[in-house]
Image (cartoon, rainbow, N blue to C red; front, side, top):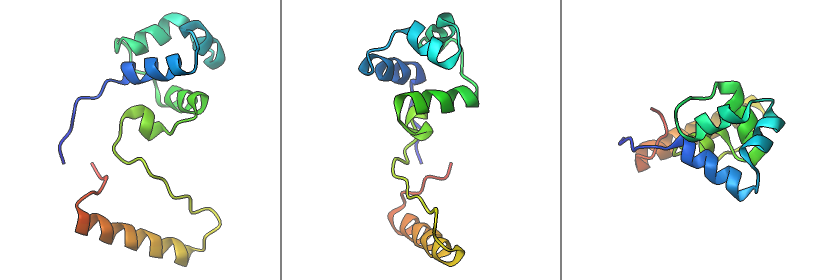
Length: 105
């Protein structure tokens, strides 16, 4: 698996711009100073995991998307029995083996 260069700050800035929000507005919604949002966008500072979750919720994206991870599809298994969940896990493993598209790091 090859690892590319990922720019968290650029992703954050793009999501913020698409949402027509200023750095101050994002900061106010998250209880964070505008200067900290600016530092995230400039990749001078890295947000803690709880802030990443808050940003993902604010912009209605997954944390994987926000962090630039390659796995973009999610299957929610809430309400499935343990047996049904196990079948899905096995299928996923087999497909990843045959397609060599696993998301493990």
